[in-house]
Each structure stands twice: as structure tokens, then as C-alpha cells.
Image 1 (cartoon, helix red, strand yellow):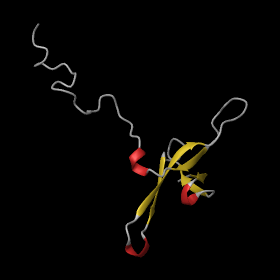
Image 2 (cartoon, one colour):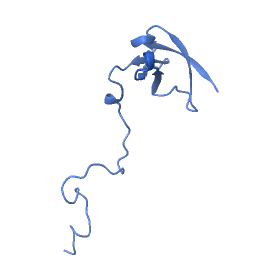
Image 3 (spheres, one colour):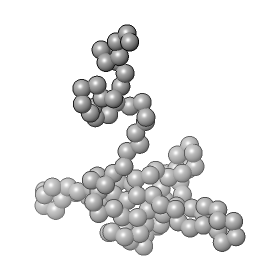
Length: 106
């Protein structure tokens, strides 16, 4: 597997550069989770870093690498990609969709 040296900003890993495995698209993962065991058998925590663009070139504005920024909120601020055809929360009786019961022969 191929890896890329990626800088970490903020949190306990501030200023460190770690090798991160890159996927088949050539990008590191969007989130980087680091499990931290608790002290003296206490509850463990997970540090979450989010991938952001490191910089752009001056002349053409092209992308020049990635970095990870610390996310102190963790899973509470996690964004999930939602497909338009995925079932979502239903509003009202019909959910705004045409069903045979709602649209009988007119």
C-alpha cells in the first residue's frame, strides 16, 4: 500500500507529520480516527481529525496536498453523504410522495 506524509494541525498531534495510507483515488481518508486508551482502566476516547486542503498554488490555484485538522466535537459534527433516493424522515401522512392512495383516478 502507498502512504503519504500528512501534517496534523491542532489537538494532541499538533505539528506532527505522520504517514497516512492513501486509497485507490490517491487521497487519504476524509476522517482519521485515533483511539486513545483510558488511564488506569478509565473510559477510552477517540480523537478525530478531518482532512482539509493544505494549500493552493499561487499562479493557477491548483490543489497542493492535504492536512488534517483536529475536530474537538467529534461525531456530533460528522457530515454524512445522503443520496437523494435514500429514505429520509417522513413528513405527514404521504411524505409528499405520490401514492395510489393519494392520487386515485382523477
